Image (tube, rainbow, N blue to C red; front, side, top):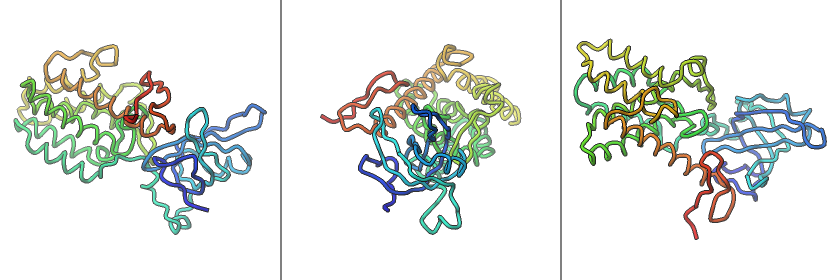
Length: 319
């Protein structure tokens, strides 16, 4: 039996075995009343729905959501969506399965950019920030939270929802934000600082373990904008003679980065730099959604299927 390819390159011609992370598991009732397993599986390249339709009683207690699994099955189209139809599934036995090539990192949806490369890029940009209090603020927050910031997703599901996604999001925003700041004669370092810190509260809003993100108690009750504001305020207060006007400018960008009260910001942008950060944040999130929707669409046509979140079909660039 062949090994299944990466999920990003899976086609209806593929069948075989493979290692994945199971991020969702539900026992459902089929039309005939018999049970089937409805699953979400992921590897480093993508994610897919999977179903086990036979021998459910045998396999349903062999694993749990949040565990690495070994599966056997074939790819199939259902309602124009690619899925895996499984014939067998069990939790991974690390000692045994490593001999067949099992690696945890291969099963966790991840940024296409190496983490160490992205982190070095962020540190280099922070070192060049002026004035010194702003550089110290950024360095202190990123260093204190480095372990999480290197691997955290930017969201649970919507955009950059994978290992290293938040860091990737920050760096792409920084690249675009600097260009926009120069074009409109805005404060480039302030824009950069706002970009680094705009989603810093996500580190407390989301829990992230074994490739799966979930909302924490503080995430549900407080939210990442408020959590980010608290962190920025507490860190700034711990820096000697930190300028209060600069603190207010940074906090305003964090508070307003969703662009409007309708979308969850307690205040709307009132500075040029805040407008730029909110606009670039929205742009990068949308571009990430568009690219993933196109990449994960299983159809061969010129357009994708209907994308519910984006409210449209997307042109794939062919024809």
